[in-house]
Length: 527
Image (cartoon, rainbow, N blue to C red):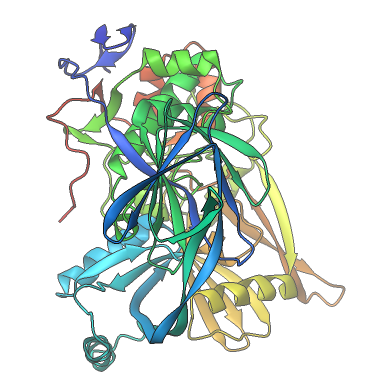
């Protein structure tokens, strides 16, 4: 266990946190770039309104003839315009792989690099690995690469092409004059803004804003914000405003660690994090409370590390009674601190002696309800059913989206679990269709099929009077990937009196809680 320490930070004293190695806190104002509106302009009717607070003004900086021009206004509304091109423009790129998560996309990118191909990770919808556009920058180079890959036996890569007659451009009016610009920097005197999408709810954000083009022909509104202010827009939405204090502190530390480790996610689009569940939910200052703010202040600068590198601070709503190891869900190197742990303060199951990889053993485990951190929570245990036709419809949408070779299926005949991990997660599921067997692996099972809330489930066939299979009931537990901290589990442990440090040690064994300092590695690519 950690040794007990008291750490002095820039905003006061943090008492009761346990540190393996006490290091002096270094006051670091880390700013991050968050894409709060990622694809403005996907619909021609999109609108985006940025306003100042009462008594303040917006300052917009644009370029005119290569020179910066400053505009002032109280409010600006962006719409989508179109600029005709003097000649047709070919936009194309090679998609090397298509993945449901960044983690697996990053592992795929590593494999392509090992073959000598320069790549970039993008997110036009799902996560994709592209042949790097700056390296393969002509139609000839793209086609030569694709031909080489096809000769080598790769069937997944494909060329995505689009001929454009016009280019979408952000348009806005200030002082009675309409401007069409690709990049707009937005500031305010007090660094506060209101933002409203398509006439919806107005939200308040802090920092600075930049409207900029992305890799998909649309725009991203990027919020440049201090990490501690960013947490005010994350913590209340991720853990809930009513969470016990020590659970809020644990979530704050994990959210800070997660953000700083993941700043590479949107390198292809020139920002760092998104504001959705693909990263962490971030909604600005509207949900912040004094209680949340105090938890952020008490833990200011604290991060979780392993061998002086920020941990991959993954977490989910509900584990279903057992956490998953990293490789149970994604491809890539194991994280030693992300491993299967029975999610209970008591010895309700000996995972070391009784693995959940066996089907019948797993069914006995999933039938248990009492003694877990999440007992009584609705996602802890669940049953969800679907007919064969419903499964076929959902699966076909997935196959179409991923351009799978078996795209165009009409029916599903059978589902069969082929492999489980020691934590009970389904690693491989075969779907027999009219066009052949679709093999679903790990987290792709959740992407491809509607019913499962996690991969911690077994299948119960539904049959008609003639004993023919008409569908399946998925009987399982947990919600989300199940790796790392359970948010509902942290509620129970906090209510039992566990400190934030003890909660984190339980879910991320072998890690160190310490102040952010210049010696810590944010992220280092695994060989």
